[in-house]
Length: 278
Image (cartoon, rainbow, N blue to C red):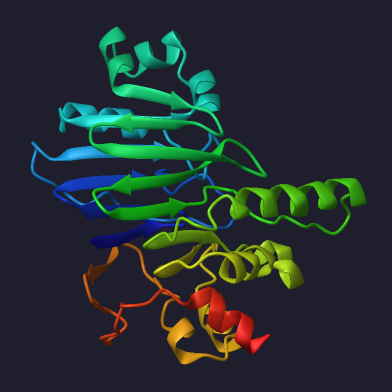
C-alpha cells in the first residue's frame, strides 16, 4: 500500500492496482492557507475511486469530475449533500452530459455499498456529510472527513455535548474493525482541545497506522502529539506527512519511507499501550 499526502485532508491510497483519492480540492480559496499539491499521474487504464465526505470547499472540488476525461475507469463516491452542488446547470457548465451521473454513487451515513470490488461503509459526521471506512481486498482504510470531537469556546453546552456524544458513538462503531490506516482530524483552531478527537480514537481503536490530517499546515502538531505518547511502539504508528505530494510505502511487515525506520507490524496494540500509560 502506498499513501500520498496531497494536501490538507486530501490523500491518495494505492492498493491492488487501484487508486483511492479522499477529499480532493484544488488547494485555493481558503483564508490564509493555500496549497499546491496535485493528483499523482497514473496510466489511463487505472481504476480510480474518488471520495468526497462532504461539500465544504476544503474537502470537495468539481475539478475531480474532469479527471473522467483522462481516466475512463473512474468512479465517484460522494456524500449525498454534494449532489446539491452538481445540478444539471453545473454539469453543463463543466461540459458534462447525463453519462457522468452513471459514474457517481451518492451515500448517506450508516450505509454500505459494494463498488467495483471495494466495500464502502459510512459513518455520520459531527460536522457535515460522512466519514468513510473502505475495504479493498484485506486492507481497511478509515478517512474521517470532518468527523471529529469538535468543542469550541463560545458554543453552547448543548452543542458541545452533542459533538462529544455523537463522535464517541460513531467511533465506537469501529471498535472491532481494526483499520490498517486511519486518517484522523487534528485541527489547531481548537487550541487546547485540538487533540480531543485523536485521543479518543487512539484509546478506542486498534489501528495499524494513524495519520493526523486537517492540520492547516501546522505539521509540528504531529510531533507534539507523538511526544505526548509514552510508549515508543505506539508513537511509531503516528505517521507524519509534512510536505505536499509526499509519499510513503507501507509493506506487509514494515513501514518504510520518510520516517527512515523499519517497524514490525505483527500486532495492532495502540489502544492497549495507550491505556497502560494512562
